[in-house]
Image 1 (cartoon, rainbow, N blue to C red):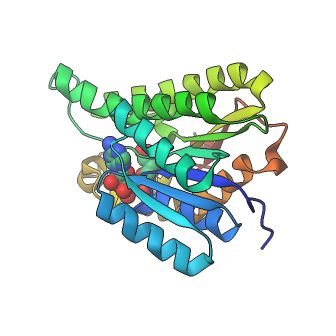
Image 2: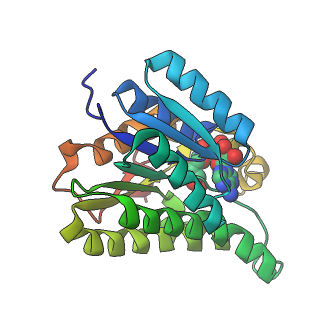
Length: 248
Ligand SMILES: NC(=O)c1ccc[n+]([C@@H]2O[C@H](COP(=O)([O-])OP(=O)(O)OC[C@H]3O[C@@H](n4cnc5c(N)ncnc54)[C@H](O)[C@@H]3O)[C@@H](O)[C@H]2O)c1
């Protein structure tokens, strides 16, 4: 495989499991040094050790709640201390909770927004503070819920839609800094988050088995957008959903 990220460093949030782990593995396979930022330090370290062993690269795991800006700063400091540079940031950490509009409390809204939106905003700020003259790439993992959604997931859908707006602003402000920013819209991807979804368990949201993708499918798209192959692509969104959004 071409080593599109040789000599480069990538931070992937929420990469101890699911889609994030597949993204980190793909970037490592292509030669990147990896920083795995996830809630629990021991999970992040275990995932980093596994990736380093599998791909012969350097990987570190950092305990980081992306919704806490001080922890985000510390994570970036650890990345720079180990690698001396940051080239790619993948904002993947996310959570989804389920209530009707009448049931949501302010705390419920903030719980989702602080991780799914502000986490990406905090890492984006760090990208603009620390990416050097060579610039870099930000890839935001949004969701098809940014475009179409289902009942009982208002904060998640709102956060993911706002992530697309953040992506556009990042591309505009990044233009003179050689920082590109793009978003990926995963559809139904075969991870615990999908199968734990109460709307899917109850049948309120049905998924054709042909519409279920693998974490590696998202990882391939992220690697493309983060690489120099996408050097003229910024401010856009790429659905990785098997065509689900395109159907009537
Ligand atoms: N699985 C799907 O079908 C699907 C579809 C569309 C979008 N997505 C998005 O893809 C991303 C990854 O989802 P997944 O399916 O791999 O989920 P997952 O639950 O398997 O993994 C999420 C990871 O994020 C971490 N995390 C949660 N809160 C965090 C925080 N505050 N700080 C740091 N890390 C945190 C978790 O520990 C976990 O490792 C999410 O942003 C999700 O919204 C998933």
